[in-house]
Amino acid sequence: MKNTIAAAALVLTSACSFFVPAQQPDTGSTDSDQGEPELTPVPDLRLEEATAEYFSVRPGEESVTGYTLTFSADEDIDFTGLGTYVNRGDGANMQPGDVTLAGRFTFSDDNRVYIDEDGASIEPYGNSETCEVRDGIVTKGPCYFSRFSEYLKIMDPPVHIMKGGKVTLKFKLNVHWRAGNSDGYRVYIRVLTFQRPGEDGGYQSVLFGYRGPAIKVQDTASFCDLRDLGVYGSQGCCDSQGFRPAAHIGGGVMVTAPLMKTVFLGLENNTLARFPSSREMASWYGRPGSVGLADLDDHSVCNLVRAASLDDLLGLNAAATVGLKPGEWLVRKWDADQLFVIDRHKTLRRISLETAATIYGPSLDERILFLTDDDLGTPGQPGSYNIGADVLSAADFDPVAVSAAAVMQEEIN
Image 1 (cartoon, rainbow, N blue to C red):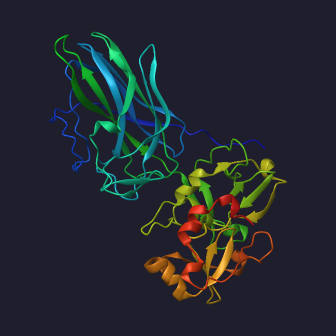
Image 2: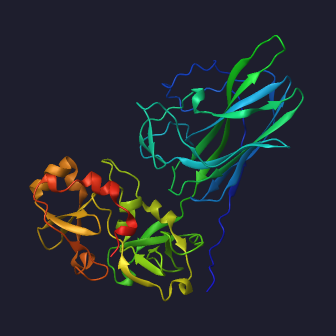
Image 3: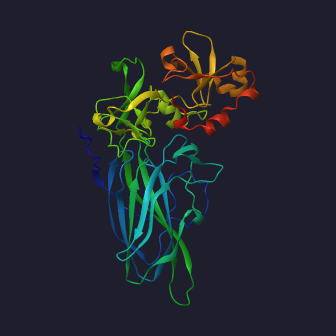
């Protein structure tokens, strides 16, 4: 059976304009909360052409051209540094929980490619007191635009535009696999130049920028009930446009089949491990919540799933299941008062409520998950959790170390 996943397409809407506002020279300050960076015009440099359109993409989209700028110089000018910045589409600064982009910059003229960085990070910048970004997610904000030139990539050798010459700057974009911000994004590019007004005129450093198109991210993936498969209340993954085809099965790729909501982790040796529900997927991939825990309701994890055919999956051993990420969560059975921490290798260790409170502090209640006997399985059987030694004191279990050492492929049974 062949995959019938439709290729994702750009949705082009209205044209986008570019401008260089007349603002005060750059001061290097990072304490502005205006949403847009200060953009300084460059004497003797003209924007000849700007070709771009507002567009929408799906998370995980292949590289597409976002916009192209063509400059001409009335005097000799060097481009010596290049940087990328992104803010929310509504012009506000990035806040905790906002998702950044991943992209690619190509800087070229008709004869030469000067910069071609695949997978370069496009993130909001700010000093460490105001902004932190982890795994593409703003964890501390607001994130102000930084106007320090050290955030630029210095080009060696620089791009030299001769008087009367032209250079073209092309921006290509890959979208982070997470759902993105509902208001979209606005991308900016900034370039450091050295202008030569004449042989005796010396050098003048100018940092300038251009505002790019608005970018909308279409999140077509979602959680959906698995109850029609006899797993009441659990969630799998659906995608209204169909999941993208899997290039292969194995090596940690998450796959499903058309019309199937269950998600599998592809392993080596023609084996699969089933995610019992969306809860297990999100415990590993969900974006951080208020206390740093993964958000178990973060359906953007479904954007990582790829489609395989039923023929590809038939005959593969899928008896094992993927467990919750250890160290992060505790488990309580619906019909019992016993409480367990989750240690490595899908091992449950009984713990008292008092000891758990000592270890986890005020976040304890948010970490407790209720599971059924079917969820836990029978120790020693495929798809089941193991039972380990009781945790008698806080010294017996270090959840931070356990979580840091956890590897998903080792949490399968």
